Length: 486
Image (cartoon, rainbow, N blue to C red):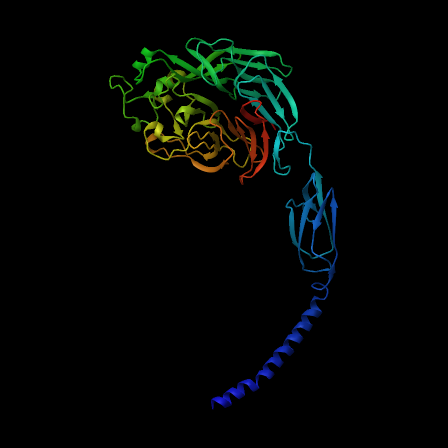
């Protein structure tokens, strides 16, 4: 019986395959008749080039529905700009599409511009086109430089810069400068704030350079035209002891003043000396447990022999929240300082830190530490996609590796015991990126980030971490920061 069943099964295979083959022929005939004007229609694909370059493409003939991939290869001295001929220009160097009609596609190649010897990387399609305002660190020069490395404008001063310098829309320029003589100084000292008009004429000058006070590092112009200035405030060894200082000698603490440039009067100030805590001398009124008072500043956190205990190096004003961001290098953190109180109110607990971040160890808390020295605090203002986010250059002195951080800052809570660390939304580092001093980061209008590496020059990187531009200062100077003015 098994044999008969087997013969029966195989005897019917030719019938089955014959019927299937006949069905396929009929189906194929019907679909061929239906698609003769589409799937098997010859389509004309014409590829043209504009500029110097070639296009790799599959061989003709082409029919309706073919999947086409084209690759644009620029000649030396050129770069691929875009494809034209589709519904909209395409910038990707490799183009894939489905062929459904006769079409002419043009690959556009443009000549690379002439670059100065300082330019080591240049991606013409990836860079932000705005020129960079480059500031020599403690030097006498500043430059407005195009992305091709050409100097558009140059400024030379008769005094050395005290670090920050800003260019305004009307062509005027304001900066901190070093006086001929000072009673004391540390790295980044200034002493005189000057403003020049677009013709180089001195139109404003303010000096704070005494035996006990000295302008330094940075300034910030407020929306009302007043100017925030950073000041070192000197205290004698006896005064330092009365504040709970656990060492001998003079100390220098941070102070912020608001200057009315019209009458040159100080209209507001905040003093770090009013907001100290220490656990060294129980007989002093500011004695307390540091970890329980993060809104206060531990006087003895950084015990520098020369008395420069804090060494703030950058300031930024947040007009939305009416607070000041102060980069405090030796504490490896940023202090958020309230600005909406009067000067008398800031001397009280109302003037305590509203928030702080970067190094919880500075207030006795064992949490994640992000910063090992830091410079250039700022909020993003030019890029609408990340506007309001916080940007800073972390020097990275411990690992000798600098990192640029972008943060979303938490809502400042009235209860400092539940402060949280900010959310890191973007960061960039590179094995070649490190300088333990000065430096900075600035968000560009197209979303890229301009990085000033103090002893090298400037980098521009995109959100993917790709380096699209590098400017090597050739060791002729160190650089303080870089800005753009779209």
